[in-house]
Length: 273
Length: 112
Ligand code: SF4
Ligand code: FES
Image 1 (tube, rainbow over the protein chains, first blue to last red):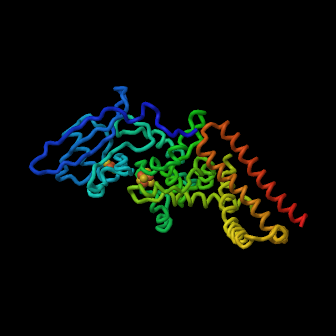
Image 2: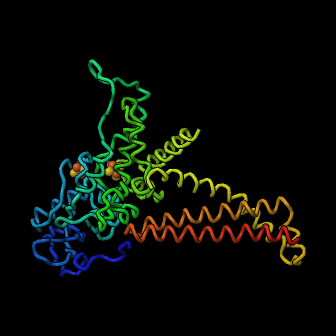
Image 3: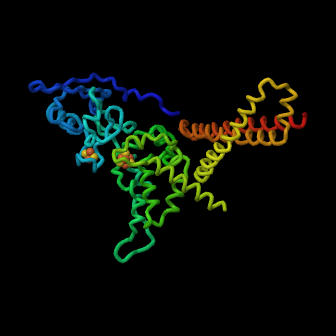
């Protein structure tokens, strides 16, 4: 059965700590609550509270870096480009998945800020999640050009054909969409029976599948569609649309999935006639 | 399961589409029949086109229902064995409703 409650050691029951910036002058302190988990201590996760002077800080990532360098160097999180390109700083910020580096403090209203790891993924430490499964799902759709032609120089594409890839190629694999999807949560690997293939691939992998299906230079359209004609891999999408809401690049995985379904119905029709 | 996935999806949409006009018609008819006598009801059901539409309704609704419940089963039941068993029970349930519905319409048409 689907698990409706958290395993005992995943419940947030640890005793949280509080850290406070030294307020300079009349600087206003902002309360930031952060999920903490350290597998080495054997303790349950806890929520630590940081009272931070946000003077001169505009983005959530800057705030997190300030916490780490000024208040608590033990806080673990991933980040790299700090400009919405690498996809490594995705967290659940005030209940919504997104990139810390492109989320402004002004977008979060006046209240406290809550930062949690991406939902549903196993937590390695604090805000660092294990994305192995997510990357495996991406790899399973074979995200690379497969062409029968061997061109002298390069595979050519008209501007119109190239345009078909807009809204698909921009994905930075941040995992915000997949980990925001309830269907992805409960149709993750139905591993208890070792049925590795009975799982929903999730919006990110399916968006990329669509990106290669649409690519005029690729010759594996039929094989790609055949692979997705599956109750679990594709059809666990119930058009919940959380993916569209959270994508920090403004992409629309739900539309890509709907298009794959449409192509599959057409393909089925062609087979019958 | 793999090859039937798209068939299921298409059928689910198709039966949903068929039900929109059928169900609107059925609800309007039911309202207009409020207070009708038993004889009026029998006569209504046994009108050939009403009987035909009712049969269509009793074919499409259980099919649509079983596909929908099948989706819920696929979502929530993680063990393959339990899942297949529940799928089986679901199909039998839908089949029974279909058979009872269609035979009732035919029986009424024959009686009236
Ligand atoms: S589609 Fe958007 S939310 Fe999903 S992985 Fe790509 S960039 Fe992130
Ligand atoms: S740090 Fe690279 S996307 Fe945020």
